[in-house]
Image (cartoon, rainbow, N blue to C red; front, side, top):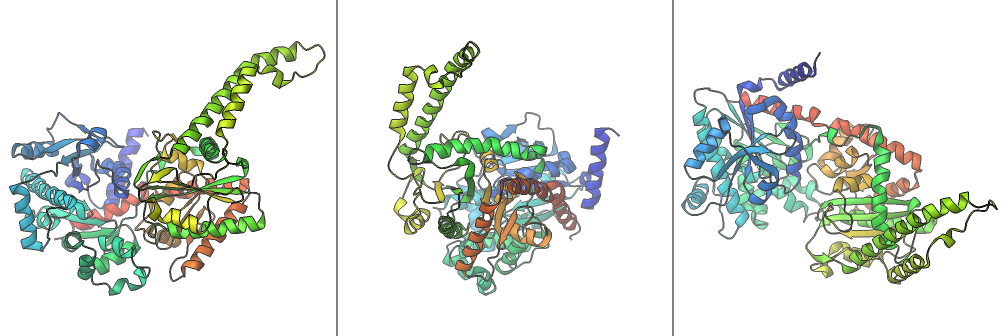
Length: 618
């Protein structure tokens, strides 16, 4: 059987699973993060698209907002517009819409339509008035994002109308799948005005859930008691909440990403989702077959270089007995569990000091926080370390030939003195470099000069617990309030490479509708910590019985006090530190193995079920 035949059979099987033939309908998927990276929804759509486009082929098209900067990097315009989607874009262009048709430059290269939401004047004002009259959605002139969202919704409505008009003769149904409130302002109208359109709405996190959870420690216990409208007014998000609620209640099918978020939909949006769409990953992108340990070692060496620059000018410690832990994500101190992680690390540090255990932990906080610049000390230290390395490499090259010759030519069969082979110039240069590098101060806690630093919660916690990177501290902190990328002068590596070089990811969130970061860890062969209040953690507890052996630790946060949860997490961290190298290698291999259970090849089936059920709706 040829590869082509195998692929064809796979597509037939997928169509059977979805309950319909993809050739019989169009699928349009609209989201604010198509060709526009903002948060986790970008990862969901980008990684899922290959599976969907394999089934729908040219009948599938993504729709997003046009922002020139992002489009130049991710979008390729097509000159040939003689396709159903290309022709409707031409029609929109003729009536004055700034619309673009092309390919999204990701796996599968799906068709994409981008609509410029920067419209003003009569179109926008008329649409804002209509939304107020019909749905009581109020918009303020000063809210730029809301204005862009309303404009984008208006353009989506135009697109849906023109596309359905162009396909009247074919009578093919159109599946219109919308993600989040930012693409949903006109979803009720699209369904009402176009009988051939079947709508699916997916919320990845309710607006009210995000706001209330960050301000109420009893969020889950009290979720049934909140009045959605009162809370929306309290947090000044009434327009967004109304848009979200309207979309959820008028769509043919309402979906969300986890059973935890389904409760939010039930109580805040007034509708319990019919189908859960868990977030997956394209695991093939991460898979490196039997090289997990080798790749880990390679990138750990690169992290070593940063750690030596950051700490070794003040004092040294054994890198072979050092573990690298990290957490990452948006700066949401409570929701992301930064507070809990810090409390557990403080307990871990105390216990390791008391036990006098010969291990160190370097904990990285990788997040995004407003800052002025990288601290000059951090840049200077990294620069001097690289100078030391270059000097050592030159000395190594210089003495190589001399060592070989003097060893072979030595009649007394004595090994030559290595120090005698090095010229005084290089000895002096190396000594002076080291002297200029060494400092008596403590290592930095934060690599960057933060804006409003005196009110930063992470730094204030560290100061309050005297966890300030003293030599005796077994847990050392690196707070890096910026994303890691190859352009970053301190790390100079991809975020995914940094993850692979670490030993453990820590993400015990209080509020997390799904949670990609621990899943990305597993796919990279890195054990991870999550919590039972996250969609991912809830899924793991229900469907992955072997999760502990596979390196997934789920912190029990439901109904527990903060202190007991912190102790629970600290105990797990201590047990992880106590593991031997072989145990960690075995866990790393099992972590990558279990990640295959979260591949889109499996999770895409939930989308097919949602689409099939939508097509059966009247």
